[in-house]
Amino acid sequence: MHFFRMILHLLRSHRRSARDIWDTYSLPMRVHLGEIDIFMHLNNGKYLSIMDLGRLDMMVRSGAWQAMRERGWTGVVSAETISFRKSLKLWQRYNLETKVCGIDERTVFFEQRMVVDGEIFARAYVATRLISDDRPLTRDDLIEAFGMPENVPELPDWIHEWRRHNALPSTRRPAWSDWSQQRFNRDRETVDSD
Image (cartoon, rainbow, N blue to C red; front, side, top):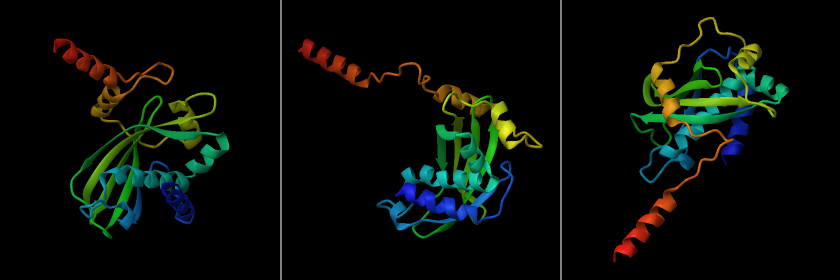
């Protein structure tokens, strides 16, 4: 279902006005029946999927989508965090605001907000990487493709800390989950002590 919604928004974004990638984008949205939970508000698991649509809108309207396709690049989310203030109710209208809040040597960081009448209901920070078939892309690759902003957004220190403390090992190194082994060892200790 999400795939089809993304295709729909991809087509809609092509008809919206072009903007610079460093601008702030606003996408009018409404909470739909398939997005709510038993409490009749937007399910917490849906927020980040909906935010995909805001980043897609930004990429299409800025020309980044076309530039990425021409170069054979793709984007992947490497980390995200979200905070909730107020619930969005069924059929409620809101704006999904999206902007690039900074870049480092390998990562593009987005700030996204769900806003009702100027008030933030939820806010997320999303770290993304652009990759090609042969290698991860660098800041220099991105600036060459999309240009340098007049005022380079400065990432807050806490984002660097969050990324460092939240990161998993590289895909070239193992990252084993040992919860089941820990539980097995605890269970075995309990049996041995009986």
